[in-house]
Image (cartoon, rainbow, N blue to C red):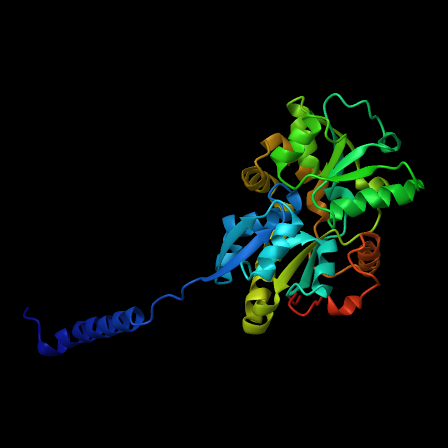
Amino acid sequence: MPITGKAFAVPRAAILAAALLGLALGATPAAKAETLRVGKVVAQNFGFVPLNVGVAQGYFKQQGLDIVETDFGGGAKQQQAIAAGSIDIAIGGATDMAFIVKGVPEIAVAMITDSPAFMEFILGPDSAVRSIDDLKGKKIGVTTAGSLTKWLVDELNRAKGWTSGGAIPVAIGGQLSTEVAALKTHEVEAIIDAPGIGYQLESEHAGRLLAPISTYVHELDLFIIYATDPLVKNNPDAIRRFLKGWFEAVAYMKSHKAETVAIASKATGFSQAAEDYEYDLLAKEFSSDGKFNRKGLEKTEASFIDLKILPSPPDMSKLYTEQYLPKK
């Protein structure tokens, strides 16, 4: 039976419509992901792993963000990068909030954790120290003079009443290789760092865990996410999207141990066993909403004076904001 003109008109129209739709779609290319430069104060802390989980699981991509990560090996270098405009988002210690008062163009936008469990004292393999009390008079490795780790040594001296002859902070930087070398050569008796480092060193018979800082510090907004002033001014929506991706990654971590351990091991360079240990210890300690702990902020404020970073207590309300946090 011959095909009539009327019968043929239907498929021709469909083909034409499909062609026009294809041209329309082709005329509007997919939106390109926006690059966001994110700094970590150090690479080897489990507290910063949500960044890597968010990248690996595509949470930042879903927010239209392409993350470029830089690990600085210490707070001083990261603050210099912020001042130079080299990064957009910084992940670091709460004591870095003091640099906002000193003119570094940034503001705290989310709390990562207020749990002291993320930091422990780690000893060399042949250390005679057996308890926190044995650290009196001993040299403790810290990253820099105005760092969170320096304050933790000062706070130990205050908590123990060691007004003289107490533990001695020694700035050795935040690179893991430098810390291990300082322990090995007895430049310092201990360092303060992530539990995974101590676990890894124990497994290699190169060091051992002593005790968490929670032995004497009970509330502290330990790790913070900062946004730079240019990002706040020019692209505040990118901050909102970054934080949404971050807290989606945190939620994923809490229910996906095996995947998180694998990503963490790659990010920190520690063994799967070390990250398995850290996961069980720390995964539950991440903030799920980024809201600041007011009592923890009071402790942070006190640290500014203790470290002699600032001469007097600042107006803390000007150093942080919760306006970019995801809405429930």
